[in-house]
Image (cartoon, rainbow, N blue to C red):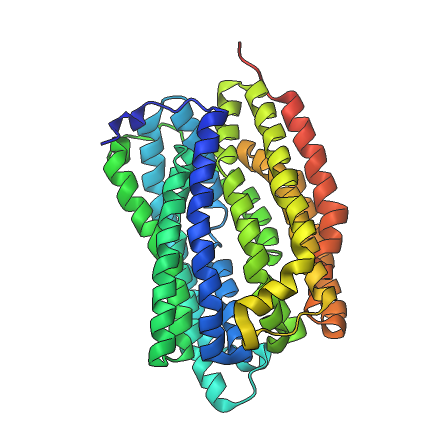
Amino acid sequence: MLDQGTAPREPGLRHLGVSAATLVAARVVSAACALVQVPIALGALGPGWFGLWIGLTGLLWTFGSLDFGLGNALQNRIASLVATGREAEAASLLHDGRRWLRWVGVALAVAGVPLVRWGRWPEWLGVADTAGGLALTPALALVFAGAALHVPLSLAARVAAGVQRMEVTGLATAGGSVLSLGLVAVAAWQRWPFAAYVGISAVAFVAPHLATWWWLRRQLAWLRTSAPARGAAAGLVAESATFFALQLSATVTGAFTPMLVVLFAGPAAAAAYGVLQRLYSLATQVHSLALAPAWPAYTHADARGQAEFARRTFRATWVLTLAAFVGPTLALTPLVPALVRLWLGERAPMIEPALLWAVAGWHVLQFCGQPLAMVLNGVGRIAANTAAGWASVAVSLVLCAQLGPRWGASGVMLALAIPFALVNLPVSAWETRRILTAMPSTP
């Protein structure tokens, strides 16, 4: 049993590399499951309902991420406490954090009742027939139930990151993907209703966190203590609020994107986008996982005054981003339509070149933003980035209403990409440079 969890890990590029490699390997398993899952679900549901499934899964992720910024703030605070040998305070703070997040989950579940009961979802999602409208009600109930469960359980991933054991989360997520694939195959074989597919997404969303909690409690003895926090929560509310504001803006341009396509371009357009999104988002997820260990490493480095390590880590994340993600994405995009036809056969939707390159360009911009985001999140200096994010969201929503009906899913992608490139990236780069230049260095 890893009771030496009471000894803080010394950050190092080798440890970050091993953790990142494990996360990427686990993501490969998840990617394979997702790729196999698409033709099964597309054949069982048809393009329209498949597009709605993709949209509601995005809605599940959107609501399940609304923890008011507490998750990110607790991760940074726990990482700092562990880095300085104050595990008892970290355990007490974690105990309080879980209680707060349970109340957030309860509030989300309660808010979901009137939204499901009286929301005009068939009209909003473009479902015209009565039977289809009735099928949406249980599916939406499962969206809110899954999101309400996810909010408190997701703290497991924050703790794993805080103690620099993110590979555990990756392996648990891979297991959830295998479970999801098996359940989708059974659903297609048994002709389960549409709501069952949304329920499967909810199970795959929640189950990895249960597995991560089980592992953490077995391996880290300090998690089972509850000493007084002695001021460890001071300032946490303000920090959480800042993270929440950034989280909301990122959610609109992230997990909520499939729903934006449904709302502004229609469910049929969402099917073609959903296929491309499954391919490109795999690269984005692998990239995020490869860089994810840098987030708590920056938190530890800032707490310990290891500025040079932080700068070396930042350079390494950029080399990895450009060489392994940006370059290959641009080079391989012309081959994607042929790959989709090989993958889905006669079920493959028509992919227009404008949509293909709009999706590719959007994900390239996401790649470029991740090395900057790891630094900003790790040290908790996100005020400027939050302001830029909300400015971009406002512009994006206006552009979605103009470009989505006119150019379909590719218009929605452009509406997201233009303000992100012109506002978010420059502000993030400026703030990151300031942080790395001013970070303390302890001999």
